Image 1: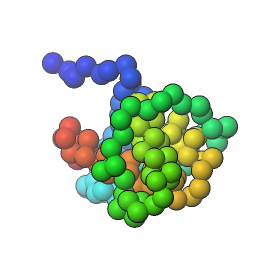
Image 2: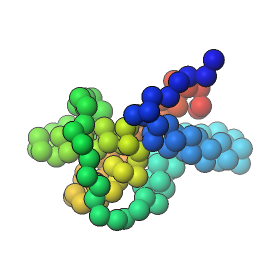
Image 3: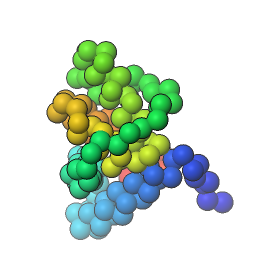
Length: 131
């Protein structure tokens, strides 16, 4: 029986499906997928995200600090909270929506979002047997 997709996670599920399709094409051509391949595929989606005005987002659900990359763990609290909020937006509304908002922030925030999403999506791919 296929796993039901919660409507609040539809956007990230669509992103995961698109990234998976990109990686399957790479896997056939190169013979395997690494975490760096996944990071590159997510980076391509970040680069392709519309550069329109920052999206307004509702209050995120409880983000966890464990999702932050190591170098962001010691960032000021405001930056850590912003990154966690962006991760939550990506997970509930999609990567492009989080990227739109991140582009109005500093480069550290966008880079940390990219790295955090790579880790979370990599774990999700492994859990689903996509890698």
